[in-house]
Length: 220
Image (cartoon, rainbow, N blue to C red; front, side):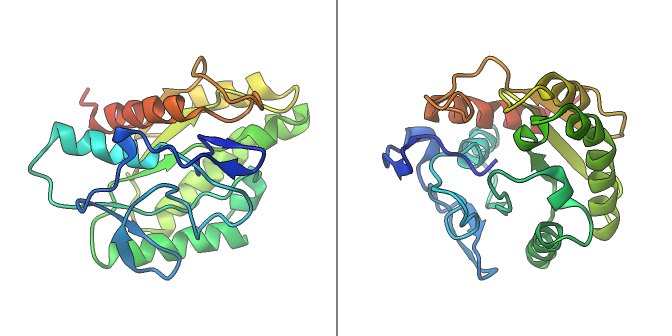
């Protein structure tokens, strides 16, 4: 979810497509829990483990604005950390606590409408880890909804486009078939990858952002 579009050999090319340009109507909760105008890389200052580039967050917000020009402000709350396992996002762990703190801070000045979840490549490394992914992801979703007092919070899950090991299809099928209420799934398989054959290209990040917006706006 942090996005590494345009990053090669740990360097970002600074190419920002029109769909990723900054706008005063798109705000970001920064590392100091203050709102500022969102710009790429969206996770700058949040994900300090990797060199970040273009991700799906800003194209997601731009698409929402295009569909509803009367919208005043869209607030993005970046929380992703690259190359993490689902175990690191369980209740009580550092990353879960950081996400909860940031979401609660955002809720003091706005309304939380959805959580966008794109994670799981690291959990494809072994079949046992992949088999445990369903239980761990469901626990995460139930816990974050409970702790935010939003039992029906919309969760939009991205089904993986790539993986690092033999558990890839197991994790994908878990994401595609979550048996929980108010879950929507966007399938990233088939989107173009960078030369590392793992992360989405800049163009694919833009496409994914638009797909996430379509899922958010979906009315059955």
